[in-house]
Image 1 (tube, rainbow, N blue to C red):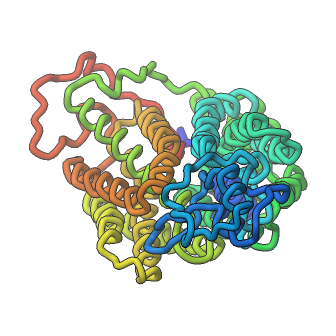
Image 2 (cartoon, helix red, strand yellow):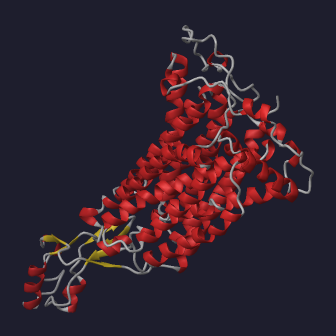
Image 3 (cartoon, one colour):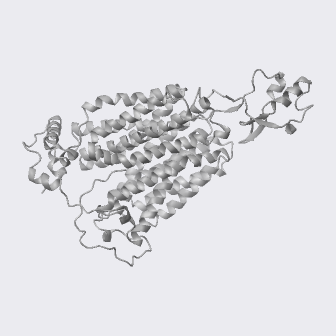
Length: 553
């Protein structure tokens, strides 16, 4: 019997139909690029200090000295969360005393910002930080907001596959687009931080669900050769394009509510795609909707100017295609022997720590020296060559050494940042971008590497479990950035050390390049220097395994 790809081979690999699907599905990923990192500007923290009310009876000289100074990155700057006790300053001013000459300011008691804060508008006109004064004692809220967004991403990863299996790829694709766009629009009307954060969690759920379903739909419609390019370059590069558009929008729109409104527009522009993007014929066949699948293939053949058979899907073949012998598997099968358990644990660590590095560096761009908009654009733009290089490396070189090498590059340059003198700002930024390049390259190669390590029976489960681990890494990442408030170099030391460490662990993985994909647990490659002394239980009778579509999530 023939499989689906053989049945539809007459369409060709790269006709007008495939090109249309490739670019439209890739373009639908663009809103995900700026929504995933929008918190960088929505929760941007401008320079601020305690407000001294106009009603305070202070001379201009005492008003200018009402905020204590502190050293930050070699410069003297006003303290953000404390001011000199206003009652004391009022008395000194009334007595005609001069600050610094008649009064030793270091001996004046301090008090918190009882009258709020004054925010610089050099970078942002308004953010959720300035709207609800989320600074000082409440500075724990911004990283929590970001972590909860990625918690929404984690929940969306769980449900998106099941929803698309039940209700169809197309319905869920546009449904989750509507969730992402609609709840982003509702965020504009947030009246407090709690409302904004709850809506942001739902946006995260829609954001990742849209990404996953677009990925699945593309891999199911496109042919084998185009499918690889779509999954490794198409969705990734268009995600980076969306990421690059974010600082462009934010540069011209400095108010957070208007910025959110602008970011919802591309989602609305995707509505006409409903009448262009078809449902997955594979999914329709699995649901017994043969006529609809036939119509899609016939229209594709007409668009590609090829002649389709009168009957594309033979009923006898369909019975075999839609009724594979399915062996039930459980998550514990990823730990069924000591050897497999070690590979799984190392894979979970690898995905989580690479995710910490990727999202940590992406979210930390406002803390870099220089223009925040330019730094964010550079952080996004560096991803394009990273994805291209990763694709080229995957075609020619062993997996372990390429992934470990890019991790050593990314982690090593991050560790080197602490040695750069403070005045060499451009060198520090260049090293951060080089670190982002290395970690992004490694991240994009993990999907293929993990899929090649595991046998067919648990391959999707393994990729899904390790991808969940990366979501845990993204939830943790904002707190690495948060540590920069105490020491600007500390996040780079931690992320660099963990990246180099996991790069060393990567060298212990078995090599999968040039090897046939394992069909059974016994065919899995062995860890370097490890010998399995126990055979897996129920190792016999598992030679027949269903074909599985590997997806990034």
